[in-house]
Picture 1 (cartoon, rainbow, N blue to C red):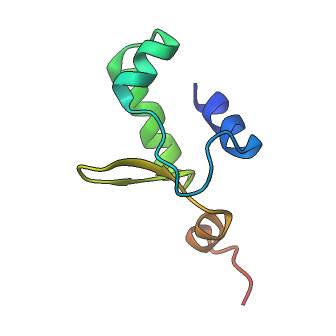
Picture 2 (tube, one colour; picture 1 turned 180 degrees about the vertical axis):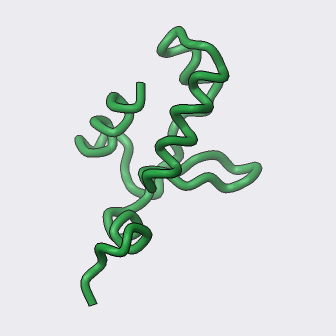
Length: 75
């Protein structure tokens, strides 16, 4: 599931700033347990592919946000 979501982001299916499906939506789409979907979302967040806003959902980060968070941004 993680790789599929990353491919969707890279392909532009999920654009920067766009809200991605909720954990519940992902459990239904992929036929997985809620806990598994939450672990995937946590991994995507840790790797800076998404950011979560409490009460709002999870959103795709920009390339710049990912680079800045990993220290790869040019000065």
